[in-house]
Length: 483
Image 1: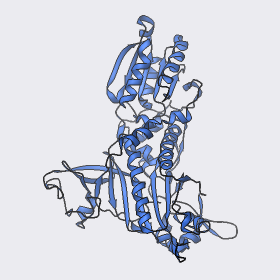
Image 2 (image 1 turned 60 degrees about the vertical axis):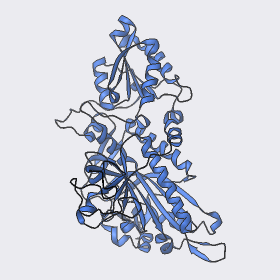
Image 3 (image 1 turned 180 degrees about the vertical axis):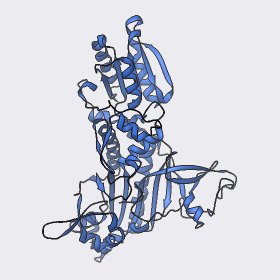
Image 4 (image 1 turned 180 degrees about the horizontal axis):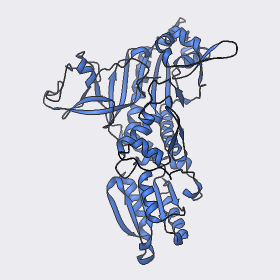
């Protein structure tokens, strides 16, 4: 699946957009509060002194963007043009995103696989995509001259795999997904993780016996994507799009509304109508309502009233694509012989769908959207640690006890706490904590010695208060509950 993630290698065409409906509260709450910390939380105390965080020695740029903050804070390093090494803090964010995606995929009954990054040039020639996309593929040959590629997407490989394994309608529906590295020979890599030559993507492939069943699957995946994006608590928009060279007759994109977005959308102040400005500028109309029936999207501007409800005023937003879903129909199953026996004894090609979320791109997009002048900020769900406890040199034992109290303050939902026990001053640790972007920071400094209080900070909520030591765990839990 390629879509337009990282500026897709597919033609850049659009249709309209619609706002993502809020997911059912019970499902969203259940999934978002089943925190990554419960899966990866270690019973021993987590200490920054044992974590490799190469954050020193890089001066802040005058107009530092979020990508530069990610590098300065020690989340990642660039190895080559458009290629990055993910360091421990970055891995924690990525692992948490993957854990959240795993939970949503499990709710769909999907099985996780890991396909090889090496794919067959021959399969791409059979599907017809090699001639369309070959210039942006990493090609190589083995010693026998057989052509291979570093895979930017796995439609051909997964179709070939399933074609050789699934033969009857009784074995469907089938939902498979993976979270792996993908490759594209991007001509001009830029904007850090937003447009790269190597990237991590969650791609899902679905197989159904009938078109009706495939459309139900498509809707289920859309609901899961909506629930996942809503669990991050950020402004996302669902965009009805053209399938382009991917094929099929139905697709949607998922965009984060952010000032650094590459796309522009018009949204209504009253109803859920939204449309991509590229579609309206081209005067081609679109599917801004999300059902394929745009009431009139041609050449819209903010001076127009909403063409759907007629009462709302249009406003303009910048947006960045981070996900894409496609109903493929028989585009690949026909070409690659993925057929099943039906109940009546005939054989038909399987109905397919492919669905992707750009994991590494999402990290860059969220960093760009949430960062402020002090540093990065993260949604609680994916922050490298939920709480950082900073302490002066002579109160380390009390800080360790407090970390344990915070961690276990909610037995049903362990808190992911880290102790900053590095040999550095409190002001330096505070500045570093702001740069990294922990949701909640607890400072055990001079006030702890003088009056038995700690400073509890939550930059995202604008909170900074002195709290008695005995009340810190409760205060932190209350702040986390608000995030």
